[in-house]
Length: 349
Image 1 (cartoon, rainbow, N blue to C red):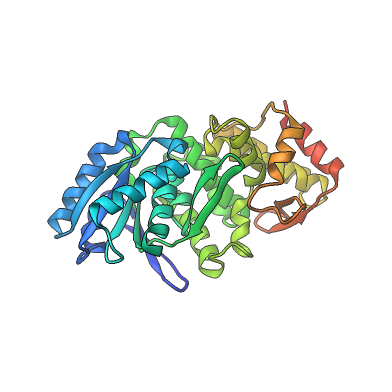
Image 2: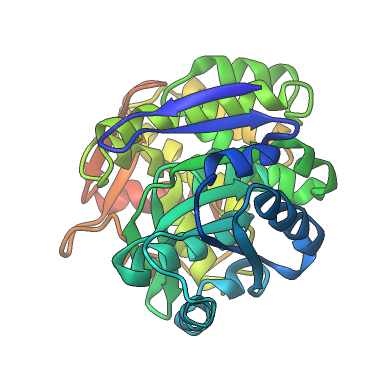
């Protein structure tokens, strides 16, 4: 079993490997009650989690929410609060978010707001959840104005990334999660890029890739929980990526949108003189080899409008995470419009 400690004011452990979910009883031993939040396709896994908790003396119950981004609404969050009330949950109790990134985002937000905060455990079942959404304490829901604009910083007390769950993941979902892994390679860990160049599917070295990506995120979160400095670099590729998701009404998978965002950000850095042509091309070549999209046919004016209400925006300024050389991320504020237009032209094919 691989273990990564996320430091900070409230350190916790990310456990990665087959059977990690079985540690749920140890993590929540002594907890009176727990709600296991999950989407319908994971009813069996949620049932197993409930049994594990009950065997540890925890009065656990499964609570079903919609699948995917449909879960991340104010209406669904309000429904969770009602369920917590029905269960009589207090500050002594806990919430378990079992599923992909959408479910852990929602469950974490509900945990952060119920009685102003109860303990929270994430049990991610997708690559995306394991390397991104479940780690770091960012929780949230979507609104008509944009993605994750309503949320809270609420770190979990543990993350149990059970890689057995990946066996049932579709190829498209697996590839989508790998977009967040390759992002970590571009901003911090070149070994990830080498591993994916050797096997672009990510299947050969899945556990090592997940561990390396989690370590990149853990280091950033430990230093900058509230996303005011180093943690912002984890948003590489996300400014355009989130805009694509919003314009497509979340019909695109997160990793697919981020993949296009990575190529766009590289092209932007190239226009700004921060990346060489070879470094820009490496983005496109590797992302394409991984089976992820590198282009998007959309309306540029609409996307720019959506990007201006992104969480990373400040006032009227557009801000992008770019690379000043591979492994050296920085913020580019209000880049020249001609650079933006040229980067857009490079992905709008």
